[in-house]
Image (tube, rainbow, N blue to C red):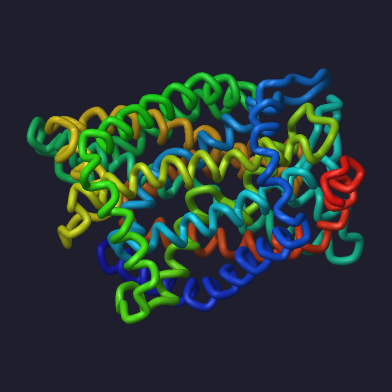
Length: 449
């Protein structure tokens, strides 16, 4: 088993190596193009975005608040709590700077992609909206749209598997609860049991469809984000004297051209981009699948609300997590990585039981992520086959939870990074190609003069 996993790790690493450069060019290069085209005006509309978030429109579909809650359920969670720790472990504190840069660019990308998801969408047999990258590719790009949409959807079937979440939830349980100290079944057996429990709990919600997922996530996510934010801010205030030195370390390491960590300076930049893309999914196109179901009539309204995603999950939550990991010094321990590293940081800085409290938050974040990611796969499979066949993807999805609980974090990171890179390429091509439609709506609203 160990040899098979080790071989799979090597294969994934060899495949990711060339694709990560393409993803870097596609996401960062495409995002910079869109930033220049929009003159950065969407950044000036953050206040409007928060107002629109709580403004309802009539019509079929989900509200903007529900759409953003579902997206945040998928992005604010283990990607921010565990993914940041992985990035710092591999690349050092300086990787946070490149996560912030990518998040800023990602806000513009999400503005464009989610605007397009409303501008170019279809309706199902019940008159409900169907939007997302595969739809704006097919509708907006007559010649190459269909092949790109198929490419995106096939990659999406694997990119949205619950690999990372199931793996890190299992790892959290094994390290905090240490079940073998109660019943000595062995690590493999306990991981299998945890995987089974996660799959059963997830099945109860995801087989209820979009409305069931939205109902659960819109209740859980705001509360958990609030609790995590309060807990994190308390730790930073209690250690306020260490915050400024932590920022100094972050920026000095980010521009340390002599560093050999993670393959040198450009390795550090790529690592930051990869983890930021994983954290907020900018350029990947997942968010557009939820925002495309919104009641919004005007695309740019939905685009503004979608911009709040990277702002909240990467700029806010990732920064809090990163600072705590750095201030605690836990990232300097060689054998700590992923969720185990973050748990140790919180244990050190929050009265000795921060890891146990974080375990509860991580569990809720993780479960909500398991719920929301399933819908992305349903959309991709439904597009590739028939819309009403999409639900059958959930059986594959549920089974993959058990597999993910058993393999190493390196394997699941490899699967996700490879799939996300393959999703970002057709999506960024489509967004840049179709960006003139977004620009036109911005001009009509007098945003561009």
